[in-house]
Image 1 (cartoon, one colour):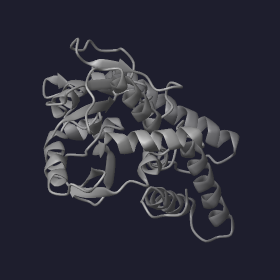
Image 2: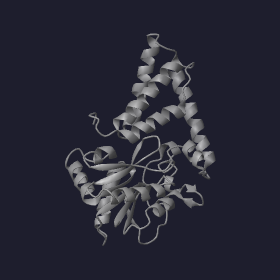
Image 3: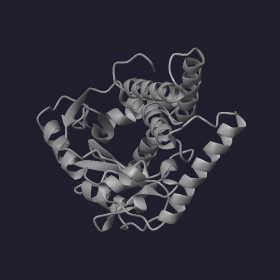
Image 4: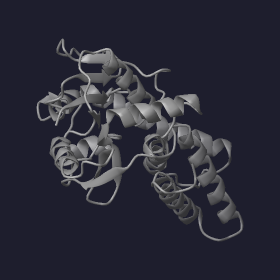
Length: 296
């Protein structure tokens, strides 16, 4: 099947301390190199992100506007760059650069599309049932249509990719275990066997967050409260991915407020109230991204 590819490589990597994901190494190659390998066979490829790594001369570059405007805006930037190339293809592969095992999933996407000619695309579904639109293949004309419609409306800055794709007739394709495993945190990186030379800097950041948490708790006279910083950041990450990026601080604020209210009326202890609030926030954020909801 003839296709072009858009590889997204421009996120802030906040929970990695700003360390650029594309440069992280897995199995002897950078994550960006693995993404390019997953897109092998594409007539044209555009990498949307900063010029942080040398690329083969035939690879196009682009940047979302404004910078760090999110993956939906990055997809739009990639499509615009591909229009300037000599290659125009009916299909566009969209791939985040931080999934080193995506190749097997890509092959299944093409196989599914070949047997369902009437659909407008296909996205990967992990073994636990989570849909991953950044491992997907879509009709170029359909993507361009939705980008144009969004641009005439609320725009694409910090918009959800699920929202961009909501009107498309898509296949859900089950992919092998690990195909959609991505790198959002250093825990994710460690689980995949990814190392980075700036481990000391990362440790310093974690220590700074813990120190800041203690300072803030003291300021509010909450020294006895135990805050799981990693869990709070993880919930914030789910909100950022499933809704829009600014939803992260808003979600954690509301979860904290709800936990405080529950503790204040004696429903549960500090720890139990915070755990319940974060679990509910995570659940609601995940459900928000599911197609068919009326929350967006």
